[in-house]
Image (cartoon, rainbow, N blue to C red; front, side, top):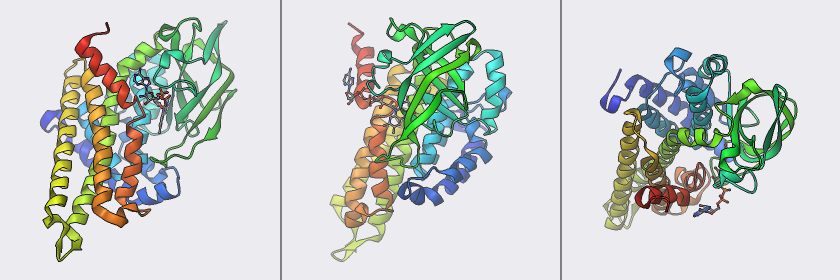
Length: 378
Ligand SMILES: Cc1cc2nc3c(=O)[nH]c(=O)nc-3n(C[C@H](O)[C@H](O)[C@H](O)COP(=O)(O)OP(=O)(O)OC[C@H]3O[C@@H](n4cnc5c(N)ncnc54)[C@H](O)[C@@H]3O)c2cc1C
């Protein structure tokens, strides 16, 4: 059923049910730094692991407006569960937009059914923003490519059935030397070497992915050789939008906690909400939250209408992530000491929010994209 902005209300209702499951485990996931298995299972049962998979391949085929609101719902419940949908976004849109008929048939129905878990491997220890500087190589050898290198900060590599890996088919070139490869779990030579402990989204599993003489048939190349980064940049508009939605969810969870506390806590004989210093702070938060959602939905509507949204997606990601950090900061303050205690929603949001200003392109990189649209590349 379609509501305003082409939002599919049935998908959103299913997301709210999955969010309730994720929310009930969020504190435990964060404190014990464990993968959100129950949240992932709830996403699977609701079909949400196939959110962006086209309907003809068994997915929900949700438009960007619906998908962004779904990601907001799940992230508001549990940032680590919401991050699963972000990890899926790159490989799914890559396969959808650049996969051969065989690749789509092999992977997309399995992804939609929740049988094929995903990972996206671009970053290396020496470079994140500057993706053209990666040094992982993929050298042609007969009917195969042989990959060598080491990736860093790779989400879900430890659980993935399929990893989309960026590697240079022309190591002498920068961005134009990068290609994308679909690598199945169990392929010889691919291993996760170290898992990191992080300040936020602590249930997600990120680590180093080592590729040592990993041999894959040429049929595992996604799209054209040397077009890997260009293809990723095309998918990145959608990914950035989902990252904005994820940050918005964290912002909302911090905001809801702040409002709840201000309504119930008393100081000097009245509720905190009656204190103008507190109520004005909450009013500012509400305004920022609303602005973030409007920027996100405007960019999503443009993407659904087939328009290029490079700068708008960057604005959405920049605004949502910085709003999340600001609101989480305010929420901790409004909670007083309780906002610093483990298990408190404001404390968790404060740590989760900070991550959103870095991953999937830092705030500075978003500003670079926006400034380029204003001033050009000269
Ligand atoms: C929790 C988490 C999960 C992640 N998951 C994945 C994943 O699943 N797969 C994956 O491939 N990667 C992943 N990443 C990596 C992430 O995309 C990079 O960390 C991010 O792009 C930034 O790169 P960097 O950390 O190398 O910082 P750098 O690029 O080294 O930047 C360092 C600082 O310099 C600034 N800077 C750099 N260049 C410029 C410039 N031209 N102008 C102005 N400022 C600049 C940056 O904004 C930043 O403040 C993840 C990261 C995190 C934190």
